[in-house]
Length: 101
Image (tube, rainbow, N blue to C red; front, side, top):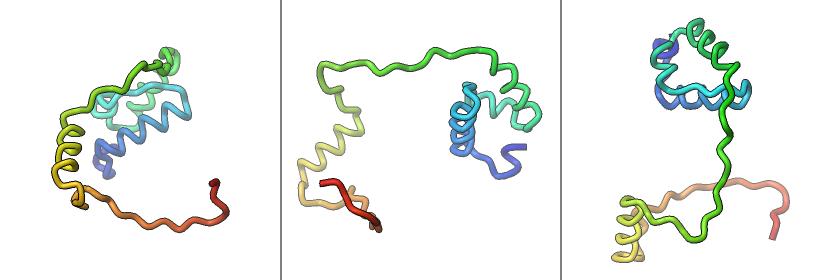
């Protein structure tokens, strides 16, 4: 049982992605919640293997997309207090080899 073994919605999304990449089968999150046992989920995958999904193709855009409300809020707060580091996410990286200029 997927959830009894520690599975959760984020791991389910990872499973969906792996099944899509490796098997070319499109599962939904609802499939995993409805069939959390491996044998039942394998049947869903086997039945879905025959169906084909239309690929998602990129669309050209003439202009930038509007900001979401969350993005607008962050932009406004950054304009209000430009020197604040409240939303910075510091990280350290160790790089090896040469970098492209």
